[in-house]
Length: 345
Image (cartoon, rainbow, N blue to C red):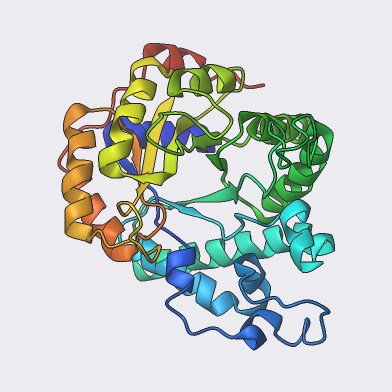
């Protein structure tokens, strides 16, 4: 049984739990510039504080511990600390040349945490490591210059190359799944999917693909202007394990858009909302108990297969979500998905 079949088998039994925010947990540590630099980057030419992905190399102890906390909270799937671990985003720190290495190291952090968890919980079902692939800090569909609407800060080929380098690192490290997340521009996501499928064909390697978009505001659209239905259709060419939404909105605001996906998707449906909407200071105040109560509605409606948390969520939030989800059946996996699960690209 391959990884996709294992996940689908579990998803028929129960709602799977994804982990929570990495950045929120990192911010709990009083980290200074020296923590990000370590010995290797002590004389680097630019400030590195805030480059959270770099901690996989300079403070892997912190990253492994965060993963382990989420596993202890009930996560079935943990995401690597690689949201910005591609050369486009790393160029802000003049570290684009270590993008591949960052991804390998990040997977190792997650896998070490999984092994520790299994040692402490003999007989537990092995959790999955999802290689997190963020949207980059550029958009291929929109101009960043209001005076030049035709200008693009990045093109499809550049994105494909950057994503390809990241994906190779994630696979070299041993990621079980690839998660293309927080998609605000579908053209960026298409580049990531194209790179993933090209590399898997090249390697004759099959790795499940998860995609999660983000509805940016009450308009119900992504930043590049797509509705939930349009986003789903735009991604439907790829052999997805799951599709869903994360970030930008809290559970209360996100549920309508997840329900739309649930009605039409022929794969698993995921949701990992923020811990409410940010306050005036940009912080997330929603407690684990409140968030779990809101997520209960997702479970009662039977619209999700995978539940987790995004900005502002912690192991306590994931623990509360897991405790709620265990009392409900997952969204039924569509017959079309079951029929095609043996078909690979």
